[in-house]
Amino acid sequence: MDLIKSLFLPSKMNRHRHMSGFMAVMIFLACAFVLTIPTTVRIEKEKYNLVDEFGMSFLTEIPDTDDTNKIMQLKNYGCSVKEGKLVCENEEIIPIAKKDDAVKEAFMISYVVKVAQKDGSSRDVARNIYFVFDFYQAKPQYNVNTDFDDKERKDNEVNYLVYITKEFMAIRLQPQVDKNGNKLNTITHEVGFTDYGFSTDELGNTPSEAGKYLGYLFLNAYIPFYKRNISYTTVISIFVLNLIVIALVWLLSRSFGRLKNFKEYYGIASICFIPIAIIFFIVLWFIPVIEFSTILLFLNSAFALYYLFMIFKINNLSEVV
Image (cartoon, rainbow, N blue to C red; front, top):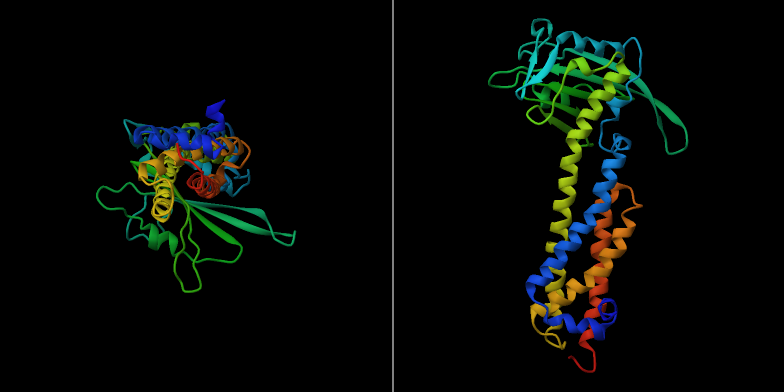
């Protein structure tokens, strides 16, 4: 019971000011680990609902039409991954990109989707997907920056690239351009063939099945990276940002507060972080996983406010034990 009270009562929390630095660090580390659990678990359960957020929906939403049926020619190439390299039995029929070719894309498919507008209406937008095979030996024959990013942009059209080499396969959204002509950041994902298999035999029998196979292949490759990024972001945020908060509070309070040593401030901070971590552990089970970084900012802000309040109360106790 005293342990629980020490999470909320300044007079009880004050007893932890002599906590060892190692123990305080372990508390922060344990909290960081626990906070990643809700999001990483939910990502695995809900990953097939995240294709839009992660930028793969242009593949998984390919419909079955005469134009999109061109994607099925991939099956004629007989490609599969063997020992970390893409091997195509019928490589001679693949339109492989060459540096001097006027058209370097193997083929392009296009389909139209309706995009909701802010006023409640919708407009038709064409998705153009360019497939490129670049089986280069030394230098790429297809320059993504000039051959794809600089393609003509038409109203109500969005261009995508599926770039296939012997070592990896990548997808890319053509970047938008600001009013000054500068390219903005865009979505790019990559599947390395040393880690993931790929076979044109598994594309299915329809364009929609082929699109889902490709989209989910990229999704499954991106999920581990996204989960690692969540872990790194959480640890860095909790240790670095909170360390800055603790250091600032220590510098501002040590001259007039009863607590003097940095270790005392750090020990109290680790205890203050526990109830905040518990609250946000619960919240994260209900918040969209894509909002994790935003929630992390709220968590650190809540900790800073709670920590400031508790330090103020502890420094003004009538007696420090």
